[in-house]
Image 1 (cartoon, protein in one colour):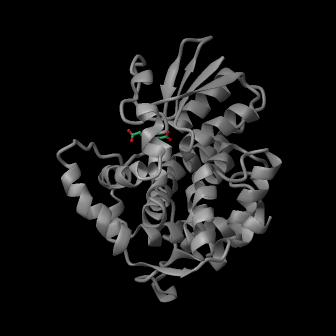
Image 2 (cartoon, protein in one colour):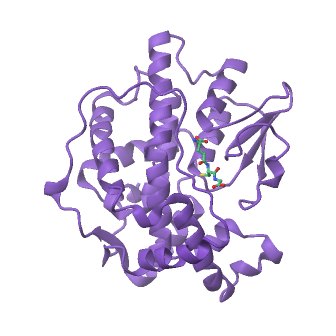
Length: 321
Ligand SMILES: N[C@@H](CCC(=O)N[C@@H](CS)C(=O)NCC(=O)O)C(=O)O
């Protein structure tokens, strides 16, 4: 039995859940409290989510790509990493590169979108059971939103999205990937692998970011992802996707125009191979309660003056199915 320590909406968690299901392993999920992560403290490994504990071997391991490699090596049936050494290394490098770029950038922009459009959702994600769920009630959830939003902004740097060129970097990364998948169907070789699971899972938060979900050159990528969700019986939409959609339908608008980006500023993809990675990089900064005061202006700026303008709500084409 595999125990999966999880935050149910995390795209890194979904990547591991998908791998567990694909490999038809016996597993159960354990929801953790995001603020303390006390459920996982007994394990002597990095305290990031997802983390698995294999009750048969006693191994506890965190970080989604090493988790999948461990599962594939320990339980070789229904392989997710190719046997051929060159292809195996190619899949591994895709996984680490996507974890270190797409995964981090999509998380930043997904949360940013929630903060701009429906920050009260944050307490539903982070505090569903705190004090008997009081913070998910109307009124209380509005009060909780700035605190959670400020904390998350500092932890992941949402207020630096523009300065860090997050939209631009993602666009430059995803356009060539979309073109490759149109030609080849899979990231490596001619079969489905852990690289495809990584891409399809880590792309998930961008389904609520109109700049990407509506991007003319990325429609084939989201169609590829949607088709994989269907073939592999994954959730068509996570709860935050449904909540933001409801809000947009009610308002008739969404925050979709990244004012500082013009077609001419689209960066050409960087040529040449990037150096091989050994481990995935992360961008989590520790935040203490005093720093929250600094986070509040960042949150308010993001919410009202982010430079991402309101446009009429149009559902993304891939939602039409
Ligand atoms: N490279 C890691 C990234 C994992 C990660 O950053 N997880 C986030 C949740 S999406 C986390 O642990 N957050 C807890 C925190 O911020 O303390 C992986 O692939 O698993």
